[in-house]
Image 1 (tube, rainbow, N blue to C red):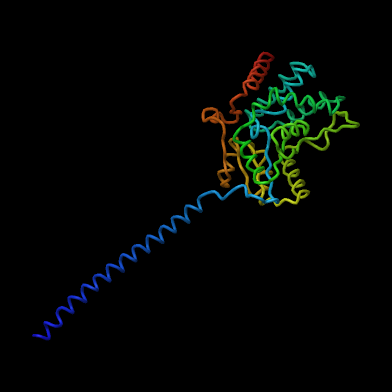
Image 2: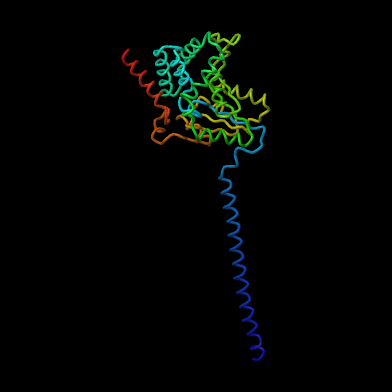
Length: 313
């Protein structure tokens, strides 16, 4: 019995120590499991967050921005046309005609080839015989009169982020390169790719060099510039509102849909492209119509054109 009495405390003591060891082991296991879960949660959170962009100091990266309805509310060429009309370059009926073409484009969601050709021919006939320097000077004035207040602050901030990262930023637009260069310079951007009108001895001939910088032509211009600048397009970014610019957006590693039309929005969602919409919800709901604060003049011109069209029917 003495022996048994001697053994009993040992059994109880061992049991207590076992319980303690078990509890300690369970606590350690629980803590370890929680630590693992915390690590997994942190990794998952990091994976879902956008990486730092644009990357600082990447001199092989650049950003390419469409102009109309991406950087600027409305069509830059229409605002330029308003300025030329004010200076008696052409008559009111020509401005209304162009406004109607712009309205048709926005409502239909795609360009009519005949409208595009007609608008191009009209614009070229207007500038034919004028000096390039004259149009550049007028462009500076028109920017202050009609364009400066129509720059999207959100898109401008994106462009400035690329500049702050040490990257070059280019406008890519079907607008005349003279207009595009004025806007790029005023916004502090690197430069612009735009439609080039032929000139001889500094005077416009009324012809284009090639074709308007539109759709696939934009993509070709970006590729040519990237090759000349030694850029890696997989590191570059592109921004546009229009499905017509899908060829350009598809070139780069970081495509953005800005204030997208319905077709581009659908395409961007399918490919998980980043989207930014700086329009109000009410106006953005009007699919195919430029939803932008401060485009009352464009809307007014468009309304006048539609009314004129109805009276002629």
